[in-house]
Image (cartoon, rainbow, N blue to C red; front, side, top):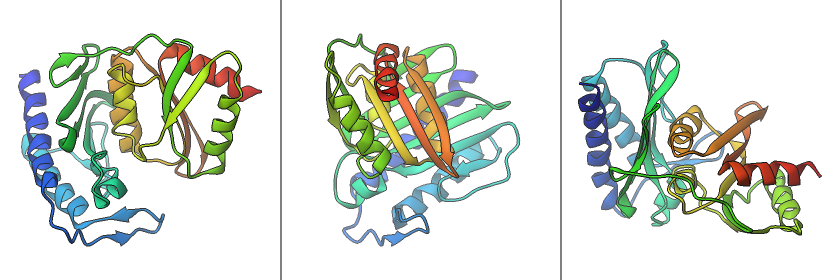
Length: 246
């Protein structure tokens, strides 16, 4: 029954992803108070997915686009993570859902519709990409990862890491959480460091997938709703933390 419950959630997320594959040219975007953008598709998926999840299990839903009063068991969703990429026609966006039971994240799904990738994780049972088990890779001398480049903290981190004489750091920037952290889990990247605005949906959903794949994540709130996050293979995170101390 447990797996059937999770399968229903996965199916609804994938169905919502189909809507995002062929959006209308006019996405009717608007700016939110924090400066981020929201489109009619963020709101459409938010409403549809909320209703679909409540039909599966009638518990509160905490979303980037709307907030409900929470109990100790609830869903966390981001209808479109990477909205700016979606607006500009880039493939790096996805739908994220986590199921939290008694304040513990026990299931997570991240679906990247344009890349046909569905990442899932089950507490204590592993992480998967399109149903196949995934694991972080072993970090070597050349360390490939992702970061944002829109804050002074992030830029300062990049400059420090590039000065490391023992390891070669390479950076990519996806401007979302749904791609780089699952890519660490599947062995494509070594790390993701981030500094800036972040929500519960970004942390809970990605953390379970990464941890179940053998990875590591830690975060610190340095201002209200702003976080410093280090995630990656355990080796990469140790190297990064040591380097950033200097």
